[in-house]
Image (cartoon, rainbow, N blue to C red; front, side, top):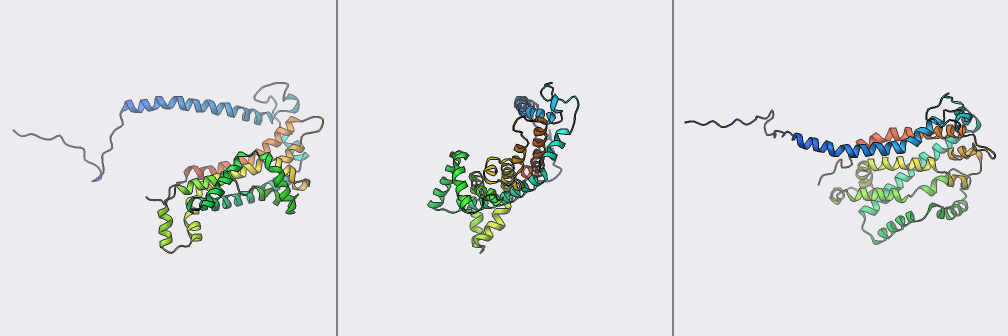
Length: 299
């Protein structure tokens, strides 16, 4: 009596394992667990997004209809608020000034934070550790506490009433140093040691190895830094008294009258200043989301 074995499934490619089908019960269980979390996220998005939607749609309402009818969509959409905001303030010059400040400050902030984070992560020195603690300690102080000392230093350096006086005090940020330090700690020390054995210098290791693999962190910090500088109001207000050097946030403040406030104009000007931030985020966020942080690293 001969017996025949049950034939096994043959792979399309030799040496490749046959993928097992996922049980239907496990898939349905994962779906049930994902539904509450997804629903909660949509609810939170609606809660946070509704004020922004009302803000944008209200900018298309005439000044008389803004508070007379509390409706979400405007009955008679108009661009009069945008035209009045752009015509009553020198927004073109404000945009140029703010763009100069944001671009230069962002580039310098990313560069300084990258260098500082690499030194704090890859060099073993007790003074560097103390320096890192001092940097983190600045996050415990309110920003208003630092305004007076920064103002005195910038004034004594002769940078008062200049765009450079806005840029240089914001170069070194605790957030940027912490982000880069934590990232460079995940990079294996063997990668650096191998480069040193091959004869690479410290500057070459930093520029050719560390900087390329830290691109996701650089882009993330660039987005945050650009947003911080664009929305900054208190520091430029203290440093500038020349209307030709005002930033967009001070320009919006100039739209507020002493006796009354035309909210249609203020809302229109505010929406105009939001456009560059949205564009920057939409352009760079795909590089951050699609970047492989561990590219080029092997244990």
